[in-house]
Length: 391
Image (cartoon, rainbow, N blue to C red; front, top):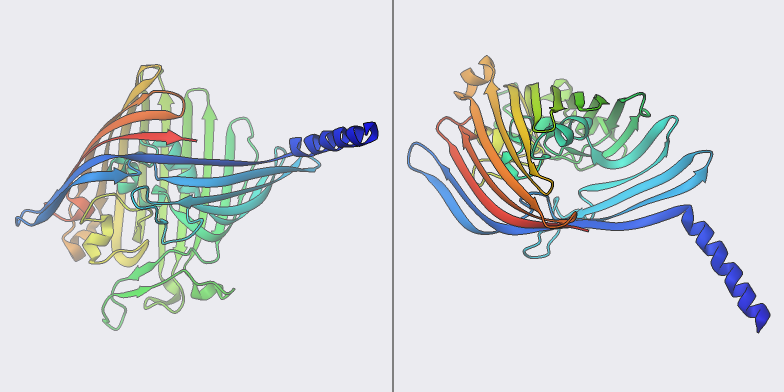
């Protein structure tokens, strides 16, 4: 009997030592509340709605993340993250079971990390999330309404490398062999109408998929943060624009924390199309796609070119509450103005959050956008209230 108890104790000790080298964590966010949204046009048409809303501050999700020490300072890591509709329990992200993230990798403090799978581009990771006062959340309030490449751009079949932290500096490069994002093309050289193409296929036939190169660099030193990103997207060779159809987008942005207020500034350019990302959260008028007459994650259009601007503030009211404000603008270039009679899109945003605990907060938001999707006289007003819990 004593030998049995001793063996059991030893086994328990070994199991504890093994588990100390690895871990798997369940995490997630549930976010729900009320929302009023009104979209109007000068001709009197438009739409308005009021009711329950979900994922206003942060998209509803649950996920698994794991890490295991594999020796030599190396760690095997993974993240599997699902997005869902809190109102009816259905899956989000085009019904992908892990549509928000699905990757595995190896990392080391000395040389950085390598990851493969479905991931964020570096524009979102380096520019959008750290710079935007709204953290690319809050629907139409986030900077992604003007900066498409930072609008939670998820790319499938991607390999990414990031350097280690070198005195506050880091950089990364990634390439997607098939983005998994639906593409929309304007009329081809023969004058044929708009044609939709899907980038969800792969089967190692890379030239027949929409592909993406993503680059980024960032530097953090005390209250100062700065970042730059560049994305190049390639149409599938079977598309109506052929192998020469590409979209390019670059962004520069940064923040400075004065303690009493945190200032955010950013500028970017996108040429030969648009990257729509997660969408704006505007009912009936979804960013550039509204201008082109359809919707899609990628819009390949030689006549479409935009410049993006943001000024943002985060004001801590006290240790448990803060106010976020921003102004952003999306301006069409001359080609887009001539082709689509496009107008400057401008947005004015404010939100307030109050932390009940480190995991649960209350929020209220207000946003007004003029010339939504560069459509002249299209306006959107958004008012929301809700609660978010992180676990």
